[in-house]
Length: 149
Length: 149
DNA sequence: ATTGAATATTAATTCAAG
DNA sequence: CTTGAATTAATATTCAAT
Image 1 (cartoon, rainbow over the protein chains, first blue to last red):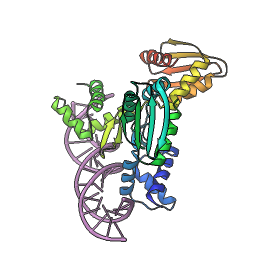
Image 2: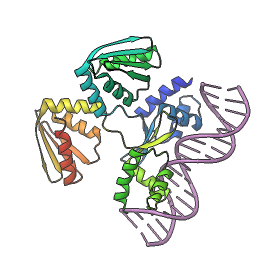
Image 3: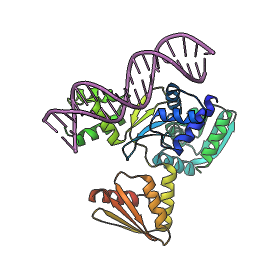
């Protein structure tokens, strides 16, 4: 099993079960016949940006990173509904056209949302260029943004 | 300085500065003339449910607990807009009246949101009773819920 | 109930090595 | 580039003491 697969397995596991510590993952993976050490899990957790959350019940639990928060999402939604004109992708780029004067704000929100898939954004007056990490990511971002409209 | 004050100071600090480890808090508090040990900070972090977030830039950072996520918030919003009839508080209780058949779903969402202020909920067919941890908390919950409508 | 000192446990990193 | 073994560092807990 390669790192990529292990990562997605870990993502699943932390959602399904209560993982209190890294050794729990080591053990569960071992039971599945995947041998890794705590060192690797520590690196995986860092790369996946999993967070360790103190739970109400007194223990700890690893979890997926928090989604975009409600306020940010609402802002994005409002802005897109108000000012969106068009969206298109080309290779690893997503180009969003907005009503004049709105692109900068849009770019700022997208930046702050800190999407894993995004390398960076450049905003003008009525255009935001999102530079993604690849073509696939650009298509994904396009879908995500369309979902807000 | 008592625990309550220290807690709110810590909340502020993690928002203002990048706290990479518990010792950072020990040091910062010390500079402010507040002497605490790492043991206490560890307990504080557990009680405040602060999370340790691996940052994009490679380090770690303590942060406030994640807000309710977008999907949950949207569900709550939709349900309240559809089915909300009234809300009232009495002591530590918040009573929400909904269109028949909707209270259970509403209770479930409020439960899943895991509000710090909430002790538990009881849902019937058209009524949700939220039992809060106190009177103040009930008023706060009322305000939060009204904000969604 | 809250805390610190000491300790135990857990997590991150270093340092080869594949 | 990815990993494990060993190590260091960080964090949680225990055990008084207040």
